[in-house]
Length: 496
Image 1 (cartoon, helix red, strand yellow):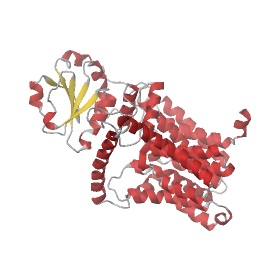
Image 2: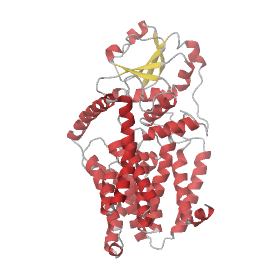
Image 3: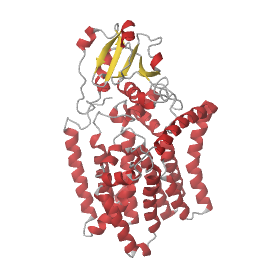
Image 4: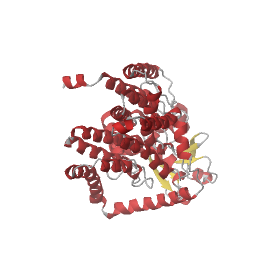
């Protein structure tokens, strides 16, 4: 074992440590946003007793959650079970898979081109802020990207020695990418074409297919065994809602160039270097002397496929960009190495590692973080609500068919206040309400039944510019409010 680790080139260690330091720079930051809080609440609910195969945010809120496969949420729940529930631990699966994604990007570039191109590809990812932000979040996207890159790297390693174990592992990783975010893992389509081009033997193709499809079949079988047709009716209902939303999104006027435009703005100079890399490669003799051309086409195919799918939606979400960045980085590395031919890859990697180590230590020691979460009013209510131990549930006004009317409130209430959110129509918001319940309202809503709440004994308990919490006067007393302590986040402390 010791001999094996000694045989690994030193540059690999420098790159891995560079990725680790860069990804875990923001580990201690307590602030997380929407979706991260949603997935975090799901994982916390699993730890607190909900079924891993049938979990929800609250009554009527993602009840049950069938929007995406739960693999990453299961990993988050496992981390919570091992290390406790906190914003920092919530990021752990994405951070680990983010390090893997960066290292696999480097490894693929080094294998297909050269070490200098590989180190430049790492630099390209480190300087792509959008990509790095997702390595420190509770979102599912980095898990999908990490498993995708790990799968293609393992498959490339299989092509060297035809190891059946590596082939089976690559299929397993591709399956995990699909189970991370479902059909959003469209990177697998160009990869499937690339694999078919390799003309595997029938036995090898069968092994790859079985290892990729078996986990998916097992996943579907478990759900069907528990829910039978009810699960598929839930799923169909959610798909109908989402289909209606997507039909609106794709028919409303959209800027079809937004995806390419944002890739350019987010990856900046490296997007230009990508074109230089492709041009230099096909102009050089290497394109004829090596079998790297299919891989170049794979990289370009990834960008084209994602551009075609997301380019015609008016939802210009950052997460749609994330799967393209590693492929841009690989091609950009080729372009940069052609411009800096005398660059010593080992010294370059060592310098990057030392620089990131210095920044990592400084960022860890500085008590003031970038994302403190201080601007989230619901998080600011946490310390006070924690003292109102009688509260068990929190009611939220939800408009029929409008997920945006409740998702943010329900997500923040479940994660930051540790209360079960329950959705109610405007007419039923106060129906059969009990003193053990509170009402969380968006201040932009003008028709909240303030007089009716006062008549039922519910007073304005906590308020800010955006949100207001109403609680029963027997629980939210003046004495309790005057004794409350402001929230604080000490450096190095785990917190929600």
